[in-house]
Image 1 (tube, protein in one colour):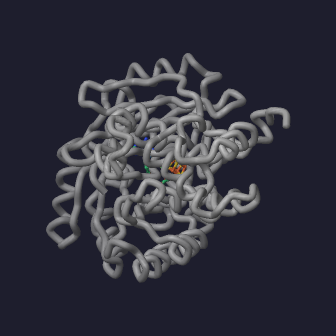
Image 2 (cartoon, rainbow, N blue to C red; image 1 turned 45 degrees about the horizontal axis):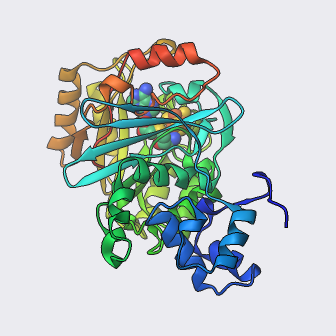
Image 3 (cartoon, rainbow, N blue to C red; image 1 turned 135 degrees about the vertical axis):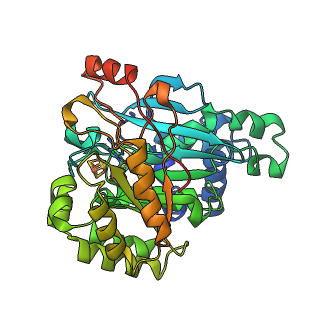
Length: 384
Ligand code: SAH
Ligand code: SF4
């Protein structure tokens, strides 16, 4: 058989367990070979079929002819003084996406992208301002996790003693995943779902459902599907306490207004791994940060067990919006906390490398803008 071109080879990184087992069957292999393969990929972060020593030579040959393990190529790799690390990844046709790794004591959180650009076009988001380019495949989403684990050094630890069954169980760089990079995960549903399944699978990354968080601007029908298919922790980008304002800030609100969104949150909680929804609320000076907004917000979330995460806005030139002052943010947080809502303010991480939520910018055709963005800088995420 001649070597398959990159185009007709199957990308193994994006296959969940049933797809992997199905592929093995199709190629005349026993189903458990699929599990073995998954472990090589996702627990040892292997990229060479020849190194997969417990697979028969013939099978390895088939794999090298018909399959590929190909995470998106890394265009740049920035390490911040605080340990935050950001990769810009090439997803073809002049598009790039970003992945951010945030180390904290006892855990490592990876912020992954699901789309190049985003069609939702929130007023305050630089990804939205780029417009929508394309959906990422499951392999490109999982590839971010695979790459991060390799690049942060877990692979070395896992390979140190290849006979140690436990070796791939510890020293893993990424312990938590948040879908808070570029794009709206629930508008790229099937690949996002397959990626989540691989992240949770015991033969995949083995993450618990509580350690994988999907963030959505509020795609109501897809919140219901995620609840039924594979509920993980959920963050909802609220940003406004009434429909008039949210229509402006998050245009998707015109399709799924707040009453529907809150009802979907309540339905989601029936199956969620955590007993609260995280509401994200970007603090925009003079726009959504007044006392009346805090009052309305309290009314809105009264019936939804939740935590509130206030995100100081990351300014960018085209936004025409400003960040609320630290005093304003503190006052706003205090009002909500006094009323019994657990409220946190997102900490600044990766300042010096522009690794903040909503700042992730991927258009490699526009290098000038990218450099400008890299010179300024923002904030980052915290525990959700
Ligand atoms: N599309 C999804 C997930 C990606 S955005 C969503 O909207 O939830 C991840 C988070 O970053 C969201 O809460 C988003 O509202 C926030 N964000 C976007 N732009 C921002 C900015 N300029 N400053 C601060 N947070 C921003
Ligand atoms: Fe898209 Fe989220 Fe940005 Fe809105 S905030 S434009 S949904 S990535």
